[in-house]
Image (cartoon, rainbow, N blue to C red):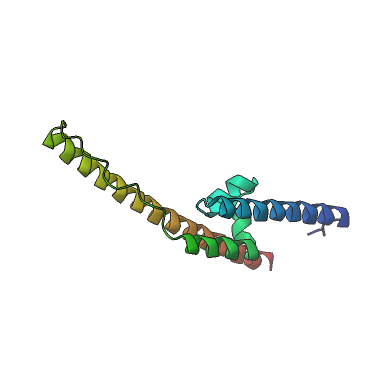
Amino acid sequence: MTPMPEHLRRATRARTEEAEKRAHAALAELVKAGKSVSFTAVARQAGVSTDFLYRSPELRTRIERHRAKNGPVPAAPADPPVDPSTSAAVRALSARLTRQQEAHREDVARLRQALEAAHGENLDLRRRLARYEAD
């Protein structure tokens, strides 16, 4: 395998540093705005891939720390005020729908966390395989 020329290494390093700066700025903006912090949100805001964020130990640690501070995604507000003119059936169905929506939000949040964890594990395994194949 031919080593990479120095000018390409410098260009790669500069591109990586610029992406890290954008990711740090995006994380700061999300925190300052009080928005939910996740790998996807930071990647979208910074214009980088989630893979890039997972591969950067410093960024990964900061995002995980902020994500842990925020806790789970806030649920929808409590039941809306009841209009006495609506029938009992409509109120019962509305309450049931609200409970189902909340359950689905919790499921989606749980699945997103599991997906992020699986993505990190997959990335780690790919790196280990690449090191093994390089030998």
